[in-house]
Image 1 (tube, rainbow, N blue to C red):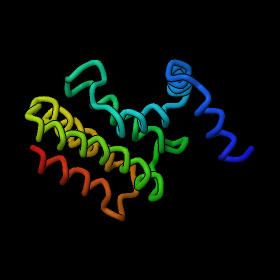
Image 2: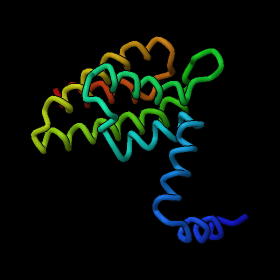
Image 3: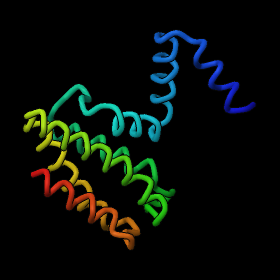
Length: 137
């Protein structure tokens, strides 16, 4: 099955059908769910730091191996999603939604600090994400 045929199938669906498909897949696939939240929405039904911590932990868990370790490549991939979330926090800050931006930054720092124990951060991507979160604060 080619990429073009997938595109043709999807463009033939209405918005409601597409939403249903994505929601069903996101329920089954934590990687997809984390990616969708990190790229398209910071409003996860709650503006609390704990809700964002849960989301960031899910992002990290999506790249863990069976023993809960993130290797170098997985760390880079997962941190793209975390950095997308931080970029949204910066946008929130610009729109004067300071409480949500702060909640995201604080949650990021707290979760990434814990994650340093079980990741290969030799490329500095986690430390870079923490730095970005500190700059938001």
